[in-house]
Length: 336
Image (cartoon, rainbow, N blue to C red; front, side, top):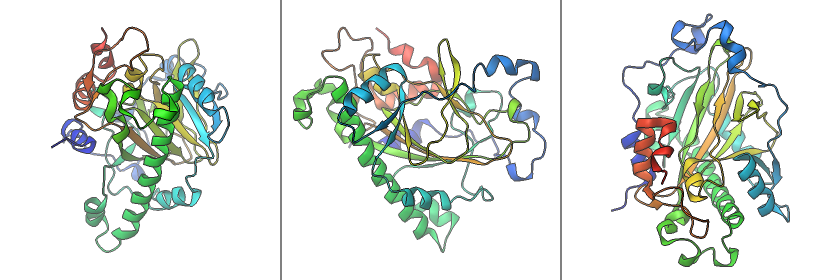
């Protein structure tokens, strides 16, 4: 029986048991456990962080959407999309079920073991049905939560598949053959059975945001991530020669970023984007991330026809295992 993506995540992304999440609502001074940098180091870590956002915003109904997405993937590894057919009311439903005053069900970031300081962040991961988690948290009112999460995941899966096809077209895959086995190397046939995991992220207001990190710099592991962010800034991406660049929220838009497996699939043509989140002193940031990737037992390799392969083939489960052990060094271990 094939291993699902969610099962692989459960096997390789277990949270360390010794980390106890902080009760952010009761904290008025930044604790040493969450102080990442000294005051005199701030200028080093925040190079040009206030540079205006130039990450492309793309209308998915545009006649040249394939060209626009391909250019954005190649230059930025990220873009924002509008006209994505995800109702704003559905996003509002998900946000409404997580008020800033309630941290129940949230825990520390899964990349926490790689760092000696903790992050100003709480995360709640949903893979598949949310019923069991929800019954524990809200024994008498879990149906509303489950309905909202299930509906959101269905919309995200449909949108992610649509964006995947656009990205494949930008890489030269013939749209008329999109459901045929011969459009890509047989190694990658399972791309079209991709599934997702939902991550709810909470970044409470921080008493000293210049010395804290909401989410440490990292890349995402799978094919692509679709992110909704509320109206509070915090997301930043790193570009060589430019430093940290803010990606401010745009009303009605969703952020899409390239993950490690898409970087491999594109044979390094599309960069996997290095990003972080910084906290805010006065406003509570909330985001919803949908991580989209092939089944765990499937193998990903560079698409045929994209010159000599830069990476050796790897199963999704093995790559997640590498990432869990080596974080950002994992992808370099696949270089040929």
